[in-house]
Amino acid sequence: MGSDCHIIVVGGPPGLLDVALHRVDDLEQRWSRFIPTSEVSRLNEHPGVPMRVSADTAELVRRALEAWHLSGGSYDPTVLGAVLRAGYDRSFEKLGEEPGPDPALGTSPLQLGAARIEITGETVRLPAGTGFDPGGIGKGLAADLVAEDVMAAGAEGVCVNLGGDVRVRGVGPADGGWTVAVEHPWSDEPIAVLGLTDGAVATSTTLRRQWVSNGEQRHHLIDPATGLPSDTDLTLATVVTGQGWVAEVLAKAVLLRGAAHPFDLLGGTGAQALVVDRAGAVTTTPGLNEFLGEAYHRTSIEQPRGHAT
Image 1: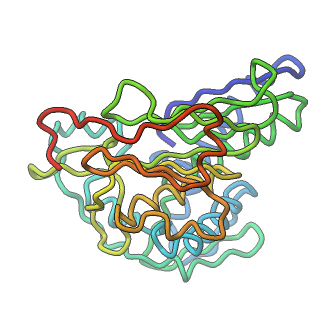
Image 2 (image 1 turned 90 degrees about the vertical axis):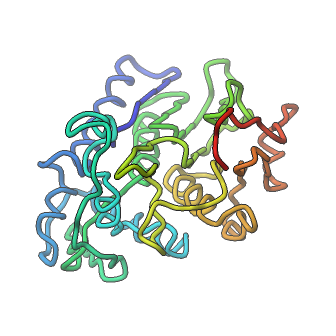
């Protein structure tokens, strides 16, 4: 999944942290498109052919299709062709390595086709001419699965942070809930501090995972509607909800909506959110206050000098 991993386990029998880390590694080996032997890579090598996969990977594909519907297409698991054409053809930490600091735009004939993915039990068939890229939803779902396994193994509480997708359950280290800081690349201090006992927080931003191709700044957040890195006027969106995979997909969907109507997809989901626009203004849904307690969120942050809006 190409992300840092931080896990805190409270209580329970010895060895639970090792169980959690092993589970993360196992999911990475199954789901990473940058690992040639992963199940996702195998699916991408055989589009149009029914492929038997593990229960975990079948769950990933099901959640990806559910996320496609939930987001109104803002998240599309078959966006791989556009991602490759944008130059994101290797794990992010290698984009600045060979073939140099200015990787060229890629080429790919792959097109969108989420509606035609077929899944029966643990057999998945990608439509011919498409590729599957779980993207951030893989991190969110992995955090959900790891937290579930650790609690089932006897932990009193757990916090799983996979590349900024945070899933918490049970009691925190101080016998209360968990505190999650919402950070923005422009600020040394959190823009909000959230408290929750069982839920998830995910953040999507255009200010990280950036690279330069053909002299143009690009980022990993592809808008399926255009096939290009998004030109949204929001720089960050954070969503709080019950499950990590839902928080992740809604954070991306909110970010793509832009500053004019960022929260219109959240109705009926129970999710709450926070966004930051290009000018540094912070806007939240009214319900976010229940996670702030006596804390508060910042209403604006200052842009770094020289940043173009």
